[in-house]
Image (cartoon, rainbow, N blue to C red; front, top):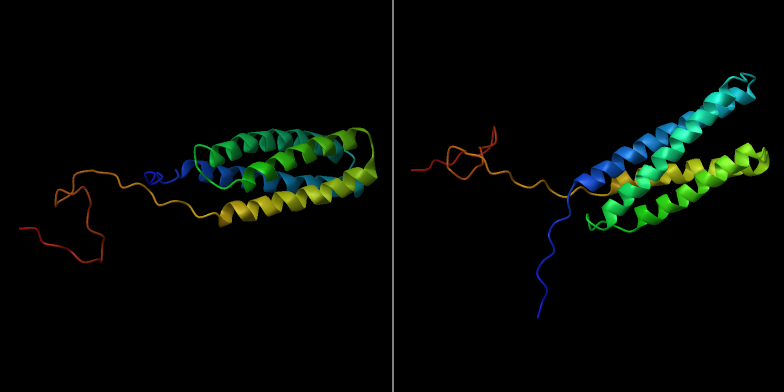
Amino acid sequence: MSSPPAAPAPRWPLILLRTSTTLLALLALLQVMLAGSFLNGTYDSLKDHEGNAMMLATVVVLQLAVAVAVRWPGRGPLWPLWTTALLTVAVIGQITAGYARALAVHVTLGVLLVSGVLFGLVGAWRLPLPAREARVVGGPDGTGRLPRPGGPVEVVK
């Protein structure tokens, strides 16, 4: 006996993954800029660096939930789940090292963290989106589809 064909994976988990990885990459790059500003002598940037770290941690936890949705209901690949779980652990370690003033660990882990975030961003945007489901609405030929502009037009008698 053969099993029935699998239903196509829904698009929404992958769209959410693309959105969360893009937001995470923007926050990570902002984090690098704020660290550089602090090292350049703008000491007020340290408070912004701390606040952005908390936003980054929130987004990475939300992305973990999105990665679960990509894998199980979405029948997507497994790599977003384990890479996001690893990023979550790295962000927690990064925040801990920052508060402990362990700068050697903090800077090294920060470089690795930004690299991992960018790896996830590229991977999420390389995942192909499934085709959209056809929506049935009334069309001129009764099939629910309108002819494409510039495409062949069928005449129904």
